[in-house]
Image (tube, rainbow, N blue to C red; front, side, top):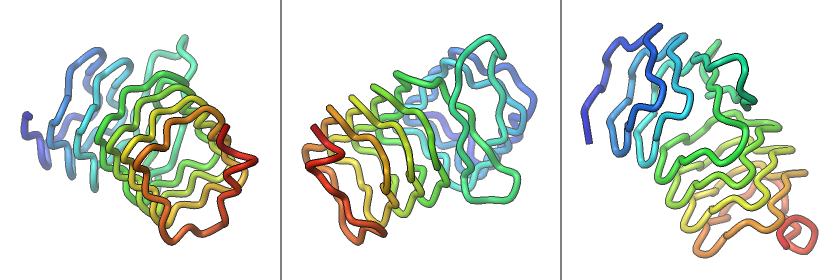
Length: 159
């Protein structure tokens, strides 16, 4: 993939760009428009993700763990295969039917998240807070649920 590590991409219109496997670590994406971009297997570790999207689209907002750093994603169907979002604050995010296959979501706060129908195959969810998260119909084959902050009641959350 392309290497944009440490690059200032702030305020750019990056809609529909294929960032598959791109290194976006430590990038400044402040106020960049990433609507409908492909972030499959992208490395977003340490990036400033205070991004915006077309106001006419429904989006989900999550806090990445750094002060004033937020990411707006399409509210459903996002392609985030293999993305590294370790330690992100995603309380209440809507990632219904998103693809998170092989994603690194270690130590994320997914409390109250909507992950119904999401592909979480081989996703690392170690140390995540999934309290009140909706995982109904999600593919959790091979997913790692070690060191959970709150117990995951599979009978209530995953069907």
